[in-house]
Amino acid sequence: MITVKFMAHTASAIASLAPGPVDADRSFAEVEISVGDPGPHDLLVEVHAVSVNPVDVKTRASFDGFEAPKVLGYDAAGVVVAVGSEVSRFAVGDAVYYAGAINRPGSNARLQLVDERIVGHKPSSLSFCSAAALPLTTLTAWECLFDRLHLDKAGNGTLVVVGGAGGVGSMVIQLARRLTAMTVIATASRDVSESWVRSMGADEVVDHRQLRDAVPPLAPDGVSAVFSSHSAGNVESYARILGVHGQVVAIDDPEGLDTMPLKQKSQSWLWEFMFTKPLYLPEDDSQHRILDEVARMVDAGHLQSTATTVYDEFTVDTLRDAHRRSESGSTIGKIVLMRADEND
Image (cartoon, rainbow, N blue to C red; front, side, top):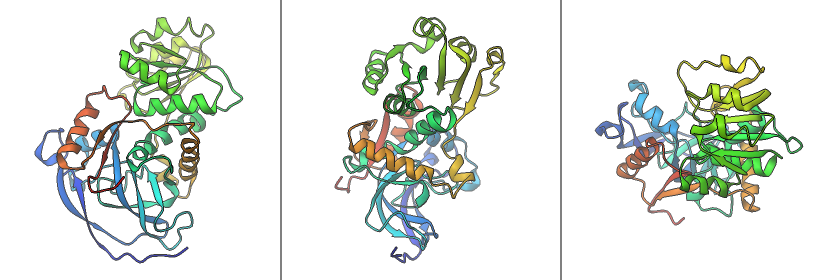
C-alpha cells in the first residue's frame, strides 16, 4: 500500500457554533477546520455528497457547547485523497461511501478523516449523491436484522416494520425481502408513503395507529419480530401482535419506556445503535464488509438508493432546510446534499 503524506491544513465546513433550534443563527455557520494527517488506518476523503439523518438533528440541538464548532454529518460519499500507513483496503483515487463515527468530526466538510474499517467501496452504478443516502440507514438495518434478530434466508415468519417509509425502515424492507424468507408488513399512514413501502418490497401495509387490530388478521399466530423506529406508546401493541418469544428491535430514544407488557409471552426488547462498533470495537471491520456487500447488491440491481430529496448545493441555507425537513417527521426516504462544483 502506497502512503501519501498529507500535511496538516484546513478545510471548509458547515458547523454548529452552539446547540439550539434549527432556525437559530449559530446552529449553522461556515467555518475553516483543521485537518491533520491520516492515522494508521485512516482515509482522508474529499467529500462529494452527504445526507441528513435524525442523529444530525438530535446532536445539533443538544451537543455540549464546549465541542463547538461541531461538524455534523453521518453519511458521505467521496474520493480518497490520502491514506494512513497501515491502510490495506483502499488506495488514493477510490470512490467510497460511509457513515463515520460520532466521536470524530462529521462529513459536513470538504475533507474528512475516517477509519477504513467502517468504509465501503461506493456502488459503481450509483452517483455520489445516490450513494450518500445509503450508509447509516443500511448499516442500521443490516445490524437490526442479522446481528440483533439473527434472521437468515432459511427462516420464515412475519416481520413488522414500524416507520417503513423512513430511511432505515426502507432499507429494512429491502434487505428482508432479498435476504430472508420473512413476510414483511410495513406501516404507512399516507397514500404516498404506502406506495413507497410497497415499492421497497412490503407484502402488506397497515396504518401504524391500527397495529393492534390490523396486524393479527394477517398473522394469526403472532408476528416473529418488530422493527421499531417509533416506540413510545407502542409497547402494549407490540406485545399483542408478537407471538411467543417474539422480538422487538428498536432504534429510537423513548424516555421512560416500560417493557413489562412483553413479559407474559417471554418476548424480548433489543436495541440497535449503529455507532456502537466504531465507538467500542474499532478493530471490527464488519461495517466495511457490509457496505461492500451492499454495493455488490446495488450494482446487481437487488437494492436501490433511497434518496428522494436532493439539494444540488451544499450551503448553510440548504443544510438548514434539510434539517428542517428531517425534523418534520414526514420525510420519505433520505435527504441528500451534493456540492454544486462536483461533476457527479
